[in-house]
Image (cartoon, rainbow, N blue to C red):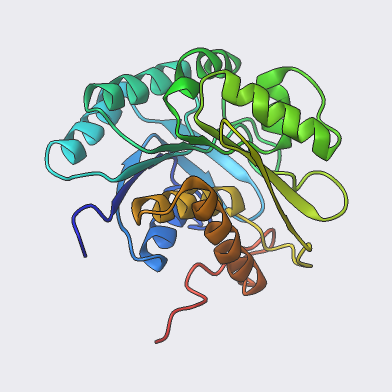
Length: 264
């Protein structure tokens, strides 16, 4: 494996291993990319609910980033759960210090069960300081509605929202449309043009970690030299396979099968 085929995940953990850091590492590995990690929060959760969230001290988060960058060439950075403004500042100020490239940010604001995973002040800092550093940001519709303070109810609304999020400074915005009725349609705006990615919905409740997996797959394909549009297209194909082969684990929303293509 080439040294450039490495990616760093900065996110919360998930002890049920369906989302967060664990899902990111599985995705990187499945797609042939070596993954490193920086844990921001320890989350006690399972397929049904979040029991507790413990945020790590900012100095420990900074030190984890330092430990990776002073020793390893990082081809891209995927960022997930950043609950507080202090954590967000610690992450992005340290990434700027090390000149991190190819930042893919999945702005995790709530868990599938509805638990809030990003505080309001952090949302404000996200708009002002974080989005301009992102190569790709991957909000779903509820997250985009928070960022823009308006309703998104149609595909045309999604296009306008993706455009406006890029105007905040992101190079590309992939707005995920799974919350709308009908086909699951995602909209990518790359600063110049739009692309639509539509697929039939897969009849399963086992979708725990879908957003984490999609953003980490996009990160992996970017590391491997794909354009953002091509990375999104391939990541969408990968995640469809992972959902189609999802696992009946737990009593709630089970996890994806990240290694559905593996030959044992």
